[in-house]
Image (cartoon, rainbow, N blue to C red; front, side):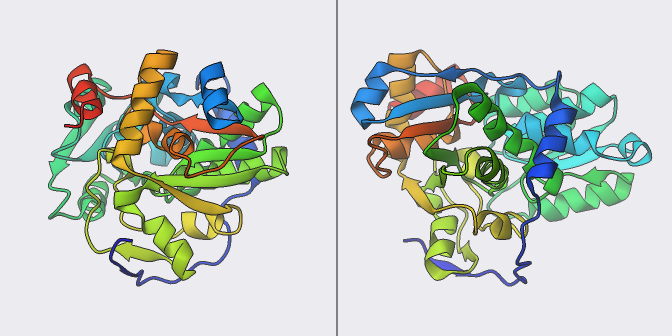
Length: 334
C-alpha cells in the first residue's frame, strides 16, 4: 500500500455525466472517430476460463482512446471560444488527442508535457501542429503552467480526465463495445485519472445493466485503490514511478471520483511485471502492439487478480503509442 493523504478538496457528491451525455458525444464523434475492432483469442479464453473481448483502442485515431474525449470537448465549445484555441496537459496520449482535435477544427493548441514523456508522443504532438511546453513532472505543477498559458492566450483548458465532455467522449467506447459483442458480465478498464472509467461505467450501466465494471491501475500508483479502501479521496505522497506513464496520476479527480464511486465495483492492481507480461502476450500471441498503460487492464486478468471464470469479459486496450526501442526495453525489463 502506498503512502497517501486525504485530498484537501470538497467531495462534489454527484456524478458529473449521465448516459445522455455519452450518447450526445457519440453523435459528435460519428464519422470522425474510428469504430475500433474487437479481438478474441482461444489461448486467452483457455488461460482465463472466460470469453474475452479485447477492445483495441490502439487502432483509434492517434493511437489511443483519448481522441474520443478530446474531440468531443473541442467540438462542444462555442465557436467564439473555440477560435481562441485550446490548452492541455498530458504525459502523451491526451496531448496528441487535443492536438489532433484542434487541427481538425483549424484552431491553435498549446500542450504542456513532462520533459521525460516518451519522445514518440512529444514528436507526434508537435506533428499535429501543437506548440509543446515541457516541464519537470517531479518538481513543477503542470496544471498551473497550463492555466497560465490559457490565461495569456484566452484559450480553453481541456484537462485529461476531469472534464464532463472528456468523460462522456470516453464513454462512447463502452457503447460501441456492447453494440459489437452484446451484453457483458464484466468490463475491465484502464484507470489513471478516471475519465475513461467514469465514461465507460456510465455507459455500461445503461446498455449492459448486469455488467460489473472494474478499474485497473498500477500497483505503484494505487491512489484509487487507497481511496476506495478509505471511503474518501486520497492523494499519493509522491508521483508514481511506473512503466505505465499514462497512469502516473496522484489522486482521483474532483469530477471522476463521484461519478465512478457508485458505479464501479472495485479497483484492481497490476504490477509493472504483470504489465510487461501482458504486453508480451499481446505481441506474441495476438500480434498486437500495446503500450504499458494500454495493457494494464489485461494484465490484471492474466495475473489472476480478477477472477473472470465463466464470464463474458470486455477488456480495454487503451493505447498503442510506444516506439520500437522503448517497447523492447520495457518487455525485457528495462
